Image (tube, rainbow, N blue to C red; front, side, top):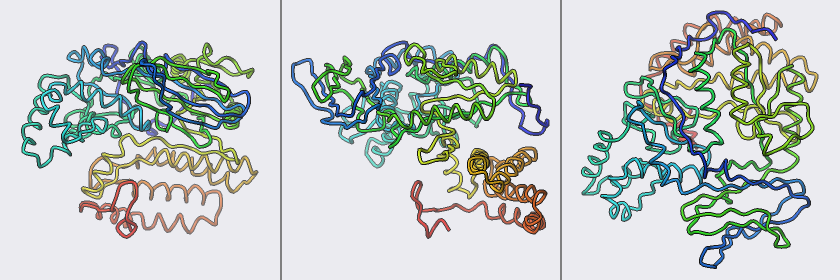
Length: 518
């Protein structure tokens, strides 16, 4: 496949990489989820039980019964008490500009525990000095440093605690910032940082970073792409190949570490999973403070996931790579490649630089997800920067959220529907929207960073304008809409800019007040 050439104005310039850049990834070498994973396929339908066998001879049932189907996969792993590991992961940071903590956005049980240990280690002197006070205030460090600020507010010792926290920054390594203008660091709230979000430092300027990702399930592939850029320089977006994704979404989907089969271990012992007959399926030796988790995935969605990956590879002519360790999962008889995440990332980088497209087939990084009743779900990316964008919108009515992912997913959705149902109208909508998004990129109509610039609403207008124009070129019935949008472009954009400035109150974050959001 030849490299794909794009107009020079199609994408904003990307900053060059230097061979001596110090950005790196730090992770554990053992004791993490990756190193302790065990899997089992149910040969027949049945129930499993999860029990904690304590070192003192007592037992505690963690999960009395979990009903499983024939062919269903259960997968369990443990993570050592990371409180003793964080000092090593934080070491050498004085030679780096700053640190980025662990991903703690999606895994609502396990990741906040890991995150909380980092907060306590980084601010160890403050937590030692004010241990009794924090216990009295019921500070939950798993909610981040922000919980300290929230619980101490109005207390006689508020000023003292806040001064001690601020003094820590003078003696400890620099932290990545979520909002440098407001002094919100990486450690304030676990859900503010997602693993692939960029984090500007003071004055919104990017710096070299030591990305601390304790679990090797994630760390190795991010280290691979950083090493690739250090070795080969920045990607040339004019010729680079595309890397798309087909993700597995289980029925009653469970994100590892977010469900009722994740436990923080209270004492030394062994966690044992048994079947109906009392036979041990697998077990893990654990210590106090360890995290143990188990996940389940039904057989039908796994088969459908493989089917979609093969169909996408056949339709696109691109290489498909399953991000599975061949030594751990085995070959399932399909003429497709298997590679560990780190090797798959290296291969994707190599192919992209040569202008070749690659389909990554992964277990939990979603992009195209098969629906068992037919069709696909197109996931457009997680909102690692969403909290800061929402804060800016509430403050000055400027929403800089970039909906490029949503535009592309909508276009592909129409194209997929058209192909599956043999509907030329759907195909036309998809093809013309894809062309419209290209024009949108060429004309740089993405949201600006500051108020009184084009924001998400203006970007949406230009997608609608370009889409209508592309449709009108194929079907005259769209001409009136295209003309009306073009004739009123100046006034519409003026209205969308003029409305910015005053603060906005939408009555909530996840659940809005309908009366206020209108």
